Length: 421
Image 1: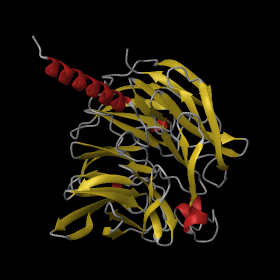
Image 2: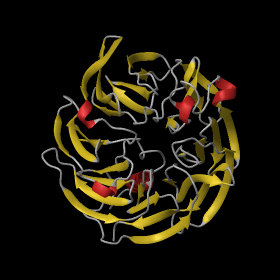
Image 3: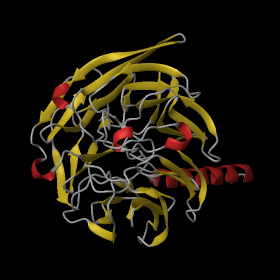
């Protein structure tokens, strides 16, 4: 017989594992639970793709480049409703609308139709949304009511000008890098003088610290452990930087381009931080720590696989992404050497040079900007397509994966596709 103490212990373990399983099923932020594009290890993943994936539900949407996120049985997405950037919450099972909240006026430039460009970040009972013009709001997941807010221009002196003069980065094309939740804090790229990066208490909105004076780029900040130290890695319009949990600058590598069009979310592989722009090429920054002293330098640059404005993924020390001329490539993250590249691999499936990448252990799921879904082997020896199918119209958004379902949007609709039986 099992003792009462052991029975209680087993029950607690079961509940904990169930809870972790539920958490693992969520896709609550840009590029998934840890901002890397990796599907959690415990999640079931498809080995191939159905010829015609079942559409569980679909709804009409309007202009916007904000990717959907999934948390706690709800889907969150943003679009343009009557000239307002608007966040929506839906029931993940049915697509039924739960609530909608307008949080700022839309802004138009030459890059795309007017609408939100930042993906919502969900953390438990709160969802964080950031507007093109730098309005940050924390809303209740239950009903969309505002809990706290901040504005990068009014509160931190950011200089949002739009497409005027020689302005660069977020000052020119808006604030697109999704807010990052780390522990009790919310990290944002605010672009203000002495407030390039701002850390808030995620519950109250109180400013915990401000750091640096870089102009913000378009990439989301990420948290990573390098040299045994948890830190924030930010790809600004002028450099790649690492900040400690207290906001102190640990290291910096300058990286400047004409317009500061730095959109790729940094990817960290061991002690190497990978970033890219279409002019600078793919860059590997090597970060080291000796005693209390940090150093960082460009370890390598690979211009033949320069990434423009999408964010590739890393699998077992190799880096997979979309390069110039509709090219699929694989690069050794340590050395920067090209393992393989296949020019014109995507053909007409790529319209304007964007694709969303998700890693599923030994495979990579790719949604092209022409709406084609591909499952590719994560194999540094060869480029091999396992399956492919057309699923949507043109899109510049990353899909979200949860419980065997893919949530994605194009320029007309948001849909939920069943990828597993």
